[in-house]
Length: 585
Image (cartoon, rainbow, N blue to C red; front, side):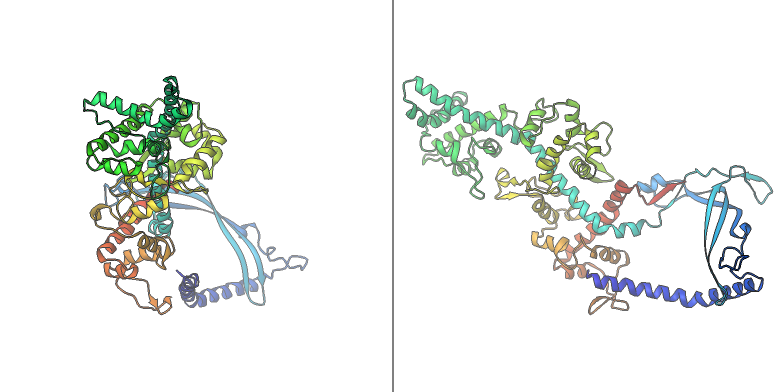
């Protein structure tokens, strides 16, 4: 929303309210003050001390400036607060509590006395002290002792909807952070489960080549010839091992022409990233594509640069490549269950550069510190009031806001904290600066690379592009699952780029319209007092963003049913402990 227009709208409302108060109350109050001051002046209060010096406080003794009184209070407390907060009950049940008796001290300070104008200016404040010995007499004449001032009372948080409406844009931004934390967690798991073993496998395959060269030299070949033959010999050895186990007939494939590409030169055609078997992601790419088949074999052969006019020979070449990469990948721990893996320290050090020798600290980082709720481990996720809350987000938010406290919580040092947050996990979620890490989409059959921002924008309005399915913090949720397919450009317009972006001031206006069923009054220049009020429905939202009415229905449900009813409340509770029902003494 235009800042000037927003300010003008608020100013108009403010002026109207002030005007009403002034016109109605001012004559009465002014008349009473003038009468009261006039009586005071006539009674000898002139604002002068005994020496004739101006001192408006001198006319009033301690009794006039300080007074004491007992006040009795009663309250109605909700007895089913837990049921209301958990949505198990829809109506509150009350019980009357009290009496609560307080000694109230009223203190006044005379600030100014104007005998000519007939006015006194003073300040006044009350202080309350619980009266332990006080009693209250009920209608039957029974004395009832005062309830303790520490008694807890539960009641409706009258600011709850106001807090949620005011915080909805911020809530959407936090929703994005927590959604992207899901992407980051997926990347961290992949790094530890697959990328680290793939790196180790690529290094092992790379060492096979000089080993093959040495064997050839022992067989009588000169060094140059042996080095040239070694790559093909490695692949031939992988083929011979597979052939011995498969029981298939020997197709005698020749790897001489393609060994260099398979082992060293193959790249992702969409990015130029090396995918050869001696490169970091080569082994996990080959293993991830699966066993040779009528569809997999030609696709893999095209990527790695091998082929044959004989389909049997091509299939056998593919089996050799798959056997070499897959076997080496698995023997280095590729695809292992991280919860039972015994080399987590080495895996973490490989992908993050951070070595955590302390087993307890390593466990804290990966799976969460003892007693943490929600779980703060970077590989963990908790259900927080129906919202997936990823531990990696908690870790990174802590690293940003309280580095020392975070180090103590996890039992790590500063260099470890910085390495994990700023050089690895934080780069996956793209919330700490630096060059964001991006996932190689070829690993899931796609093209290019994808970072957290792009992943979120795809996943918000369409299918999740890496794992498939739909994220729980997107438009395809509940009754609308599978119904929405918006372009990234349209998602950016809805969330960030238009005058109606939901990460800006318009989010509160959107939610007001959802609650009232009508738009705010609008004129030629935007919002204005006395403007036109229009119905707020699917058609109105569809027109606003240039989307279909079915997509508009999904968007309205996402804002009102999900963000407003679930996420914002969970966020307020998580950040500030606020709830729809407040309990306090």
